Image 1 (cartoon, rainbow, N blue to C red):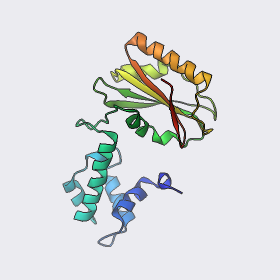
Image 2 (cartoon, rainbow, N blue to C red):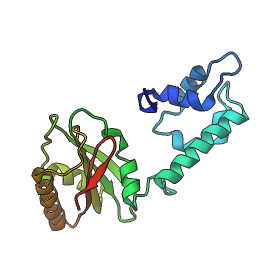
Image 3 (cartoon, rainbow, N blue to C red):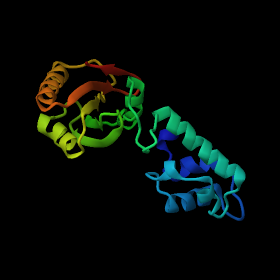
Length: 199
């Protein structure tokens, strides 16, 4: 069914491969996630992991290697916030919407250093339409003192070609952002196997 269908616990258990000290790999993964939810896992240390029953040096090093690789892949800054300096880094933050059966319109908010300070789900539409208003996109930008915005939505049809409405929304958002001094960097359309950048 693919790794995207595994639970967080199952994904972590795959890294552990085997159990230890009377615990299965799933048991150990559950213990880790109870203490360090996925929102905090990128900050976990070797000593943190070693405190958890069933984790030996090898398992701790495996997790830390995966964490470090993830940091490098998404370009995490020392602040712990991902850096977005390229389309690939932006698309990495949008992977989860590719397979949705309805259109999801999301926005990524960046500070002046290119750090991702917030992500907002703006709207969930029908199978082929999503309603977006500039105030819904730029209100979170003001709340989080963002200087730039990247927006994206998925096309459940599988075609990444932009519709006239997609281009109209992009132009409207770019104009509204310009008036507010907030740059619309890009509007991505994503599907399971492709993507398209309107700007």
